[in-house]
Image 1 (cartoon, one colour):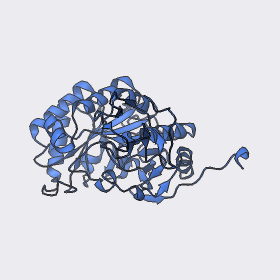
Image 2 (cartoon, rainbow, N blue to C red):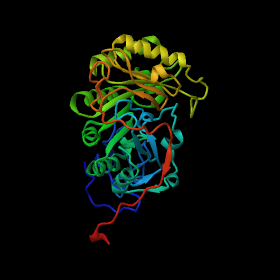
Image 3 (cartoon, rainbow, N blue to C red):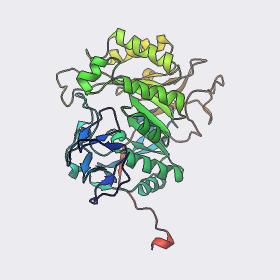
Image 4 (cartoon, rainbow, N blue to C red):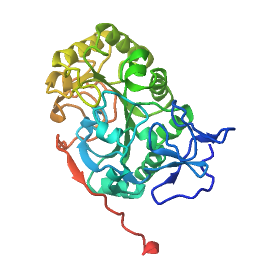
Length: 374
């Protein structure tokens, strides 16, 4: 890693970490398994990391495509302070090339001018505080590619008592993974499918590094994480694949890790495939529950049964949901079932009035200046 060397930067670039020089004059990015090798002026596959004056720079530090306050259930995280609000933002670009991307206008953007909102890590933490948000989410596009900005923001949030959430595909190298998840409180990891063929053909990536990230999160960190698989008809929704996926989660991660099956809608380069039928989500959920997983959800559909949380001990509904709306809540502040006292897996706290399903755009506020800055 040579990211601390001096280089001439514009006001929109930031020294990047996780790279090294090659003997032929190029540099190699060490952030993710793509291992992009760049000549002067070239950008990586993510589009936001570039070789400039012999160094690597991040071109989106402090720049965002917009900020919104969302329900935490939208990430989706159903066991991380349910009912709370989260300040969400992303930048541009992505290190995967998913043909079915549901946020392609942001993640595939090559237009840096769309990054209209500028905000320091401290300003983001202040805005979350000022709006009563329990957490800040790095989402819309993958935060792995703006790791330096995400890490600095997570540290600023931690200093302000605000939690941080990463919504990510988990495609990251071990050293960057340690630094990134070392400051993150929760994550939702997209497990796109459970075959290498799907990953290679439809995402331009590989399955094994994502599984490595999930195992790392479970066994080497205290990060609360949940998994999401977008089910695409005829691509990753066969009984065989779903049985294998559920069995792997149970064996490697344990029964308490929540698994979300969400509905695909035709988008980006995969417009010739029909939307996921609700029955497919229900079938996938039943397969995973039959495999022994405790918390399996359906998403992007109105399905109270599939959206609700059930106690693994007494099997009663302890959180009833319809999409992002919480209809009933039966847990104490420590996450124990009010019916039988069983402790559910997750991160819980006192439950008041839930934020609800709304989405509120916000503008970033500058934090108050200290006396020495005035």
